[in-house]
Length: 389
Image (cartoon, rainbow, N blue to C red; front, side, top):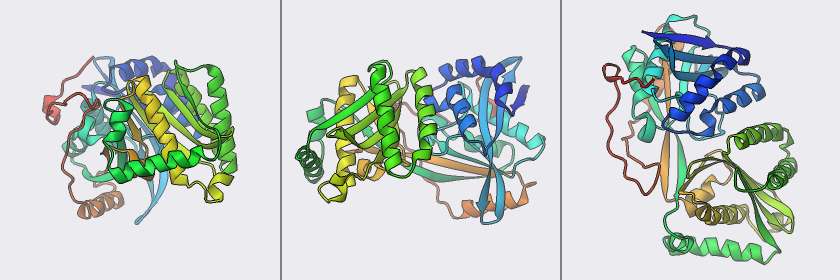
């Protein structure tokens, strides 16, 4: 029998920090956004969210954690209290923490049906259905009789780096390669161009300070100075875990664009990217698309030297369309699962409404490493659960 403890404050969460870290290390993916450091930073900076972290135990041992936050959302049927994942566009993927996602989801959802109803709708976006979730979220909801709908949430440009830089470029279509090279020639004509970069464990701390200052300048120049505190806090927390990748494209010492990425093994998740409307852009000598292309190209070229295998471009990044058009080699699908019991009538009707308007998208397989073939895996269901302790 599973035991579930609900955590509503950071003070209560401290007792489970070591358990969270252990589960994170033993999970299928060690993304920074799934770490306890991420959640604590998020909870401190996003003050309008209620915390509902479900700690799942079996025979006295923690086997999974389901981090959720509560927020108010306006829908077609009025304001709804929505339980969701704590990401808010600062990444591509989220889900249960630990090596037992199916058991964690099943126990967590069953707990939510039997406790006080301070929420109306459970809405879980950022689900990596095709590579990691494999239908577990939908199965867990159906097993307890909830209404659930599956929708495509976001399409994420994937850039797989295979071979040398010249081999990678030679794989591009002629018109795409021409546009990439034209952007490089155009920016080189305007002055001295540099790529500033900081990778945790690779570059000096002075590079980190310089790049944070560049980010501050770009945010201020675009009227978004208030966002710097959150970016800095999340970046420094990621650096403590050796998972930070900061970058800036600089023309004559003036930052034209900045990027923020999180590293997991040989994968870089580029979660924020922003261009600065400098005189070079506003005068028509350089377009924002060209700036983004040059920065992405130089990041990728250097990434091959650093041993990176692939880059995932978050859809909230300003350069997503540039990455999709010029640099991506494939697209990853992120899914959203909305669910509610019939006791929440308005929410259940909303789920049914979306289900009626949504066509099923067949599953396709991807590899975390473009050089490794992923074998077909079967969906987990409750009777087949295998618990890792």
